[in-house]
Picture 1 (spheres, rainbow, N blue to C red):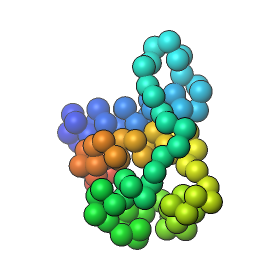
Picture 2: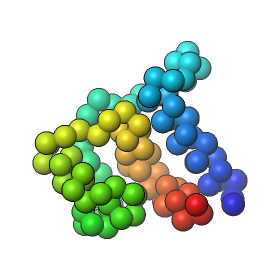
Picture 3: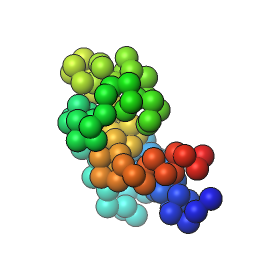
Picture 4: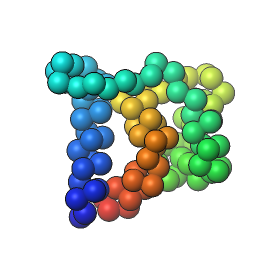
Amino acid sequence: MSKVADSIRRGLKEAVTYAKGEADAKAYRVHVPEAIDVKAIRAKLHMTQEEFAGRFGFSVNTLRHWEQGLRQPEGPTRAYLVVIDRAPKAVRKALQAA
């Protein structure tokens, strides 16, 4: 496994721990937005709902609920979506190595 994939995996675990409120907030300077525009992230990546859901491990139904505003992703998922939005290639690489 590459050093980059290891680093991304550690970062994702830390983000989830922080989003769950289980980390020492003083040790981190992380901003996880309260609301995420999942449809905009998906559109930016030029992916269908099925492609996005399959690539990043979401159910299509959950993705549709988010995009229709029926539900909002919770803390750890919002953090994951921020990473997907900012570094989609790195997330793909990390997931392929798993």
